[in-house]
Image (cartoon, rainbow, N blue to C red):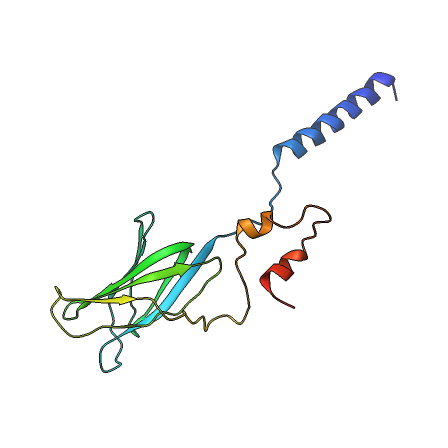
Length: 170
């Protein structure tokens, strides 16, 4: 093989592989900062309310996420960004239900059941979240560690395992 042919093959291989490597992006796993809320809408007798409008509003941004309850009164609001929310439910012939003080963290999946009361549409029932939301769908344990706690870890010999000590897990 001549020197020029060998150089040409090496040139094509080197730059062809280089263009391929530079032209592709690695598919790294993306951290998803979302949560999901599910529940059931019922009337005062415990019967399912089908077709009720359920709306979660991000209180900081004012963005609403809306769905309707199914024939069993069940609803699901997936892919909700983390943060504080206001939950509202309405249906003709029932008072409007509203619950504030709901804060969703990464990976939360609380079940929030809504009990509608019979009344005029213009009447509202206001509920302020005081009790902890129960996540009956997942059996995992998690904790959100704020940035301040991470930054305050000692720099000398900082180890990722020290985050376990911050969370109080043993």
